[in-house]
Image 1 (tube, one colour):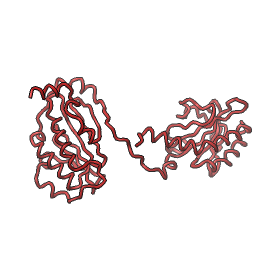
Image 2 (cartoon, rainbow, N blue to C red):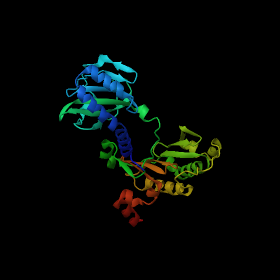
Image 3 (cartoon, rainbow, N blue to C red):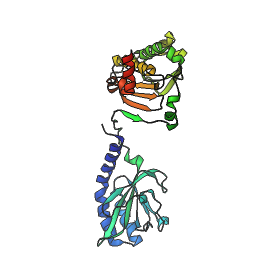
Image 4 (cartoon, helix red, strand yellow):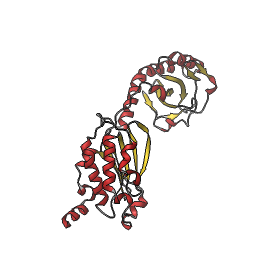
Length: 321
């Protein structure tokens, strides 16, 4: 599976492959006409339809001054001749003296839509004359795109420095959920295995749980401790077979919850504050009292013991026991 950055680079590379050749040919033709604005307009107008998904093409000189009109497939907007484009987002990067460069996504001041600009250098006798800019609306580029699966792996994020700085001055306060933790975890497990809950987040300190259901995935429900430990809670949710495409196996849920409990009570200073499990993508989230957060696949989580999370602290406690 590709990372987000790899997915972005792949989409940009695909765009560059498609537009590179027509823009290179256009630059050669424009070099012979530079800086005749009328001639450039005619050349750009003839070429715009041959650049896939391009909705705007224009030419500007090395000082960032537009010398052509804004050329659309439907015609030319001459009012932009002489416009200063030096504040365009793509001019903040190193410009290509040969070939093309793709900008990052930005909002076009002309169309007010998210777009990417392909910049093609225009040269004659080894002298850089300026650039051809071709704009592509992001919506057009993504019409046939599919969501690329994310690579799932352990990720750690540091939280608020102010919280980390005072962590050893605090102590875990016994919550109502702590008092009923076995009941809570057992009933959430039942909801996930038999009633279509595919994602749940448990907030130990504040005593609440958020759940997402397969039959209503766009809305989540927040349950209090009293609601969660009600043995009749299962009557509120229709039966739903365990999803066949879930990456987490039903028997793994209980093991995960047992480890959640252990992390909650392992230490009075460093302890699990909240946690989540999503059976569809097989990912867990954990936030500790030091405000540090972790995300990892279920299998990787179950391979870790308390020593992984607490180091020598966990070893000392097990030895003392």
